[in-house]
Length: 390
Image 1 (tube, rainbow, N blue to C red):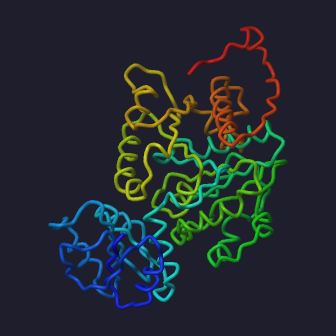
Image 2: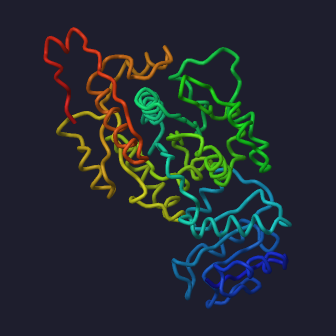
Image 3: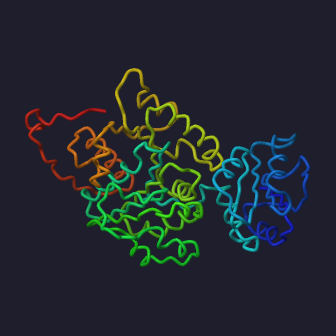
């Protein structure tokens, strides 16, 4: 790749020259000639946000869609500004000290080659196409069922915008989780022992609660999730990640790019479909994430002729359909109130759907399962244990 650096920081040019990804690195000034390189790196000291957005409002003659533009900021910007830059296909690296050239180059390379990020073979990430599609319930139910089926250690990491333990009983005052290790994670000094001390433990299931401090979410970057999962993954037979639905959060991006397999949780709602399409164009495409990186799960599924089928949705998004999960109305509220997953309410079709997903996960990570005999209720004895289909 050919890189053009618009910055007075000569150390950045030297570091880029040392990396094998870049064949040539040259310093330049704005406006750039039409024959500029594959990668353009612009320092905020050379142009402010409004000037940059105006300068790259439209692709100029000689520019191609393959050219990647990076804008370096020493301060932090919020998700609204990140979305604005993403819509212009400009990648922002913010809150990094200019003097730390190694981190800047590392982040540039990570975004140019996300496939080079270590994908942990036993990490499975659940990501919602929108809020309230049932991502947390699904991740928690799968973690609970797998903990019954295997004798090894199961992990559930909540890397979304909520603590995420509404479906698990917690001890009052158990203030442990991501907040307690944030600064050590940021400063590269977090140890496995310290991480283990933050888990909520349920027999062989260990849960890392998400951030309770809502304002802290914006301080996380993708590399923090990558570092966290790399550190933890070797301690678990399988590690499930609830990445929520906010793709503008760094934790969600890092989880998706460093997991062996991602499940996209969606519904039959048109608004959910439209939101995913926006994310796909504005975020996933620049990250080089595509439909091949996801299995689709259609949650809250209803069999109605006037609604799209699960197969239709999977084909539309060009994804492989991993399964459907039936729509349960009041039981979802009851489960949250009672701090239980929906596995506890003897809904056969729902339980079947979670079992199928867990079988898939077990096969993905080569887990040996010991599936206990399901207890029969009075109704299943009467009707021969008939199960709802998908």
